[in-house]
Length: 319
Figure 1 (cartoon, one colour):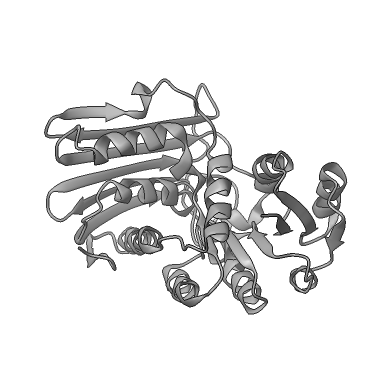
Figure 2 (cartoon, one colour):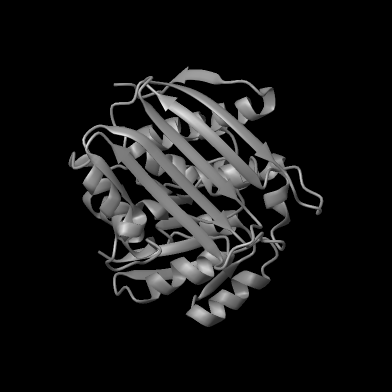
């Protein structure tokens, strides 16, 4: 099956992660690309031999040749663009998080659940080999019952060129929604029979630059009064490497971490794209349960950070 693709957005993730993977696939052809000002789209079109640069997303969606759309824009635009793509009957991949807040995410995923074509929320970290390895070990019961899931992700880089990341109205928040959604998504996948939670979060903005979002965040969540999730996050940290990730799970029979993995490592994009295209070819749907519960818990953590108190709730897909 030949996939004819259009990109809405032409930023770093498109240049570094999506287009290089698709360039090596004989079953994919990128037909069109657009970006806000047009310059980045033009540069990528020249580099990757993309035949059409569109002035705006409506022009791209009106191309009958484009059957599948990758939405890789600032978060606050996701719902508008995804709904427009659904109206045009496209297969859709939208970068995580699906929207900048829980209400919009819930509404968009409810529409996507009724949509006859493929709709897919991209979480590339799910497909990193060390994360798949850890998940397989835990779900196979090798650690016994999970007791503590302790995840941390620190970065040195702050993306100063992406002003929208530091405006909570457009980004939805700071490091918690940017990096935290990946870790929450992975942590909840290790608790498939989750029901209720109690969450507490403390977030701080240390930056001297104008910003309305947090650059460090620590969250503690108790799931069903027996499993503790700890999520620690930071931007602009002093580190010996650009990124530090530590994922540890302790259970009744022992514990493991991502540092115990010694196999092949990638950023997960190639496997994720393969999964997305597989859904299109087979006519199957992504299970939105984990995405919806991720956004629900994220919303509770931001509420806790604002109120300074714990927040209790139930997952939408409680067992």
